[in-house]
Structures are given as structure tokens and as C-alpha cells.
Length: 88
Image 1 (cartoon, rainbow, N blue to C red):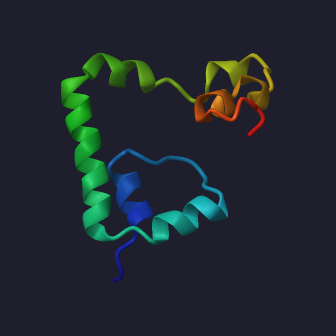
Image 2 (cartoon, helix red, strand yellow):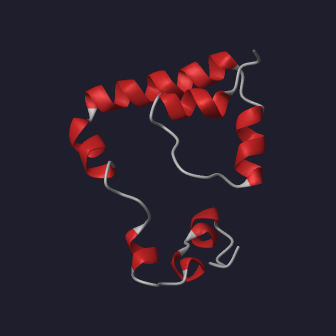
């Protein structure tokens, strides 16, 4: 049977719920070793930062989106990139 990165990440508790076709396509390109790096990194972070992991376990989506703010309004990508345009 061929390796399926998405299934391995679901088993590890990293992925849950449905994925868009684009995300599904991305995960299909991951090798087994790349997938293991993601899983081990998550496990190591959980060991080093248990408070962060405990807090993020209940975090389903950004608080701003729960408050019905427009995500584009909150994006500072343009400011951080130096373009000066928050819409980029």
C-alpha cells in the first residue's frame, strides 16, 4: 500500500476534519520522512511547551474570525513586507 501523508498526520492527531483539494494535493507530495519530521516536531514542541499545546487544543479558528472581522482588514502582510500596502 502506498504511503499517505494525510492519513499519517491524522493518526498522529495533527490533522482533523475535511481539507480543500489544494491542501489534499499538498499533503500528497510529502514523503514519509517529511511527514515524520512534522510529527516529531509537533511531539517535541508539545513536550517543551505543554501550556501552549493545552491552550491550542480548544482553538478552532482565529479569534478575529469569531468576531466577524474581515481577515483582509487584519492582515499586516503588506506592512511587514515593506510594500506599505496592507492589501498585498
